[in-house]
Amino acid sequence: MTTTATHTLIRKLPLITIIVVAVIGTYLLRDKLTFEALAENREALLAFRDNNYLVTVMAFMAAYIVIVAFSLPGATIATLTGGFLFGVFPGALFNMTAATIGATGIFLAARWGFGEALSQKLDSAEGMVKKVKAGINDNQWSMLFLMRLLPIVPFFLANLIPSFLGVPLHRFVVSTFFGIIPGAVIYTSVGGGLGEIFAKGEAPNLGIIFEPAILFPIIGLSALAALPIVIKAVRSKKGP
Image 1 (cartoon, rainbow, N blue to C red):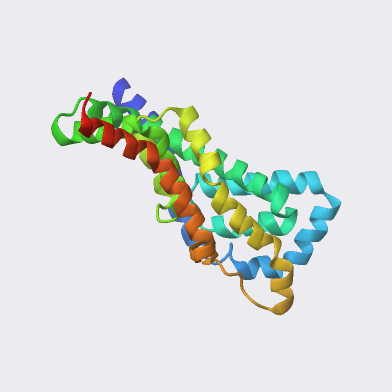
Image 2: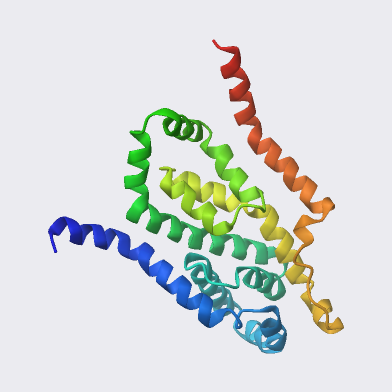
């Protein structure tokens, strides 16, 4: 194997590892990280937290980072667990921090393996591809926040797409942390109320984010994030 081929393989190895672990993890953990598992182990988790708070925080965040970084099943359950164990605050802060770190891991692996080369190809492209890339570059902040705010964009894709478009690391981290605040707070608050849900033998309403009282404010935030794009489009049509 040539030096160039070896170097290319090394650069792609982190992303390949993530993909392999994600596939294996999906198969092995699909029935493990569930609401039922949380319900069955809730008393043991609370007891361990009460006796080892700092260790619980560190272990929880480490597990959450791994789940997100390797796109394993159970991210929603992890968010609920954060609320159940630590309350809305600091639970939401722990959830957002861990999710951001995990997402950054995917972003860096994808950019190191494929993103830089793909971004360079897009920059050198002509025609419509060049126009689309230029439009995204001119509105990176808005596009990044929109991907995080809108619940229709899968979290995994929202981690990969920026890496292929040459988005700077600091923009990705900032937009991820602040962009996931609405969803993180909502699901953490659901987790914070799991005690009553467990007592009633019910299941949490995971579709709460699509209820009008919650979805409309998120749409409003998304519209605010998209406002700079609209303003630039209007100005470009008017000309100098």
